[in-house]
Image 1 (cartoon, rainbow, N blue to C red):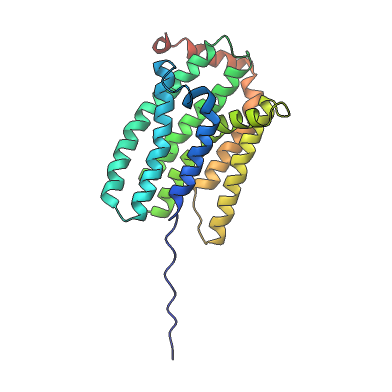
Image 2 (spheres, helix red, strand yellow):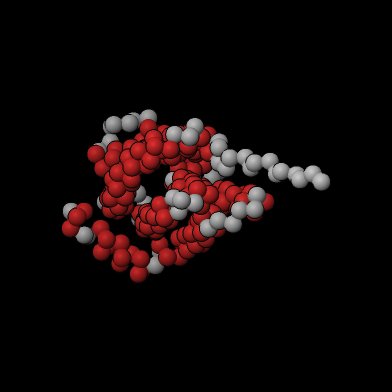
Length: 241
């Protein structure tokens, strides 16, 4: 009687660093005219936010590459640095929301709309990172929560990229909707891939629910008087004066 021994499963996400690098390329392309090309020419708040957001994705690339090579200690060291980056990224993003409302060049409808996207995205990023840290001993869950954080940078980056590349056929709002659809399609593809592989993880369904909710509510809520009043209160906080 012969006993068949199943072949070992291929390492999960062994090429993740290349996907993160591709995501970073898309983000750089989107923000190239406004941030990366004139790098250092802006004020400190813009520079801090752009640099920390970029370093977050770079850290994920490095961490993934280190794990592929079995360098667990260095992976943890980079993770510690990444948490410091996150601690700078969050307040810089909160500041950028207030800066938008003080920018006279922006159409009146735009700051409330972008704030409705940005503020929940910051909260959701903290949720994803917290869940990733709580699942550090469950690598399949941990890496999916961390991977999901990269997608939060896609709507602002891809909106700018689509509006620039497909102008004048695509206006800003069409480009914004297209960026959300892109993220939603990516998440559906990731969920389907997980199901086919026998994985049942929370990160991608949770992320799809988040992006779908923001996508469907961003216009009605951002134009409501209640949201306008909330944003007036927000921008008048002493920390932004």
